[in-house]
Length: 230
Length: 230
DNA sequence: TTGATACTTCGATCGTTTTCGAAGCATCGT
DNA sequence: ACGATGCTTCGAAAACGATCGAAGTATCAA
Image (cartoon, rainbow over all chains, first blue to last red; front, side, top):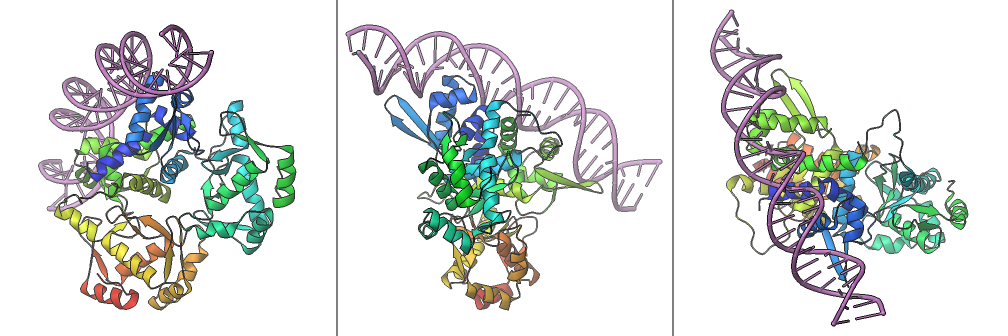
């Protein structure tokens, strides 16, 4: 197959509303079953099945059999990056009236995971606090952790050295937030911060969604450790 | 329109072979006329026209009228990034037999521009030389110019300081080369190096393509200044 | 074994999209 | 003014892909 045909094939796969929903649903990095994805996309199991097969064959998804379930996940971070780059273009231009959205959306806007890091008001607030305190320096396309940031993360128990050692992944980069339309922290350090929050019970996932809520203890810790006001 | 619908719309636009060809043709950042794009995609002018209209309306392309010509170009670097991220997935997995390609492709593989920096064997060779000499450090997802690299570019007359000052763009990043399947240098420094080569007559664009050829003087200069063996 | 659940395959339908010929509009050169 | 060129609009034909009901396979639970 020609290079261009394969390019078009990949893009076309992401270009169907049903498949787009599924891909977005997998953006938090978890693996979901075919039924969950079907429900998420609002289509029947048969339709979802054929979509999932095609996306798997094209190398967009990886599938893992576990008993009678099939867990589907994004095949690689490169796929997540593609989705993210399309999302960035799809983010509605800044308009005068912010469109009203349902309660489900409200939770997502408040806080959610974006592949493996934090997004929404939560993600942006943390990022802003880190920047304001001079721990972080984010451009539109790149970023870095300052010396004071390094020691802050070290004190919090996040081993930045270990993350830096793995040169296969960028330590620190901005990721444009589709709901806040401003950058939040991504990259290895963003992912580490996110798991740190989960592991210490600072945030909890809302059953069955990408949305996360901050626990009371999490609020206190985030304020005291990182200076985040929510 | 819902966010997901817009996501699917954008992706679907890139998902048609004709449109994909045009988008790829615009990846060097130049603006092309509708007829040029039609020919490039192997479709009639009418078909191309409707495609171009749709992509422009969707915000993927920007168009500039000049007399009876209409110059189309990618609307923003964000669009180029999306295309690049799809390309990365579309790059054929490393296979045993390298598929035979025509002479036109051969020129592209030898050297070409990728949006605003150098790609192909030329781009990869320069990047390799810089890395080997310790001027550059590239991971899979990020990179940086070393101190020796800074002074090298300074000696060559490329003002890295000025590039660093513009925090809106990452200075240095890898971009996966679809023909070589290895990273080449992108980012602000990659773009600066590319224009430097053009401005000093080290490379020349092959009429009407993204392909570039290295001039005899360019070969010498590249070898002497950057240690590149072609 | 029996029934339920998770998922896939098959087949037919239906709506969408692509495509191009023909005609129309705008601009250029002379 | 005139024809040539670049591009767009219109309309119809053809191809394609999404969808779902029905039926089939695999796993689980008892």
